[in-house]
Image (cartoon, rainbow, N blue to C red; front, side, top):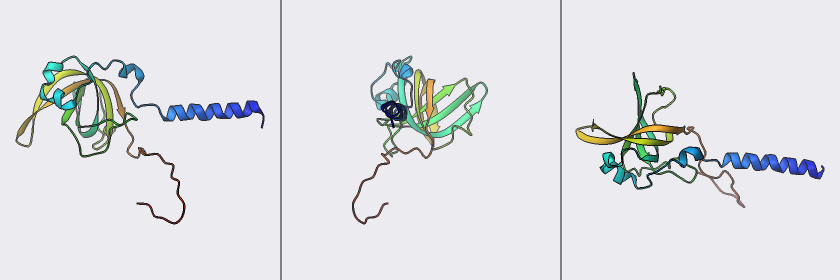
Length: 166
């Protein structure tokens, strides 16, 4: 193999590596984010942050579509280093992604993870059981829907000897 071929192959591996590490939300959308506070502060007084551009992640609870709007009801979750929501039971609340675009419930299915950058448009009070809950309303600039089987841990495993995996 010549040096030229080796450099070419290394270049391809480098590009694949960089693409594999790319975050789910574009840098263009990330650069528009103006609110970096906690979700709990946002949830307590969403109208105070009207017009702020925020980055949130979570798990879809429900998707509703009816003209003229589509709504995604989302359980907020912390966002990991990859930009993907962390699969945990630690949440600071719920929010609604509301858009005039059609978001197909067959695509935006319950329990899928998403990351969204959007403009806060106030709140919507709806019942959760017998409790009145103020959902922050987000008009999306960009939505990243994460695949179900996405590996969030490194796949590399090194070991010596006999062992088991769980």
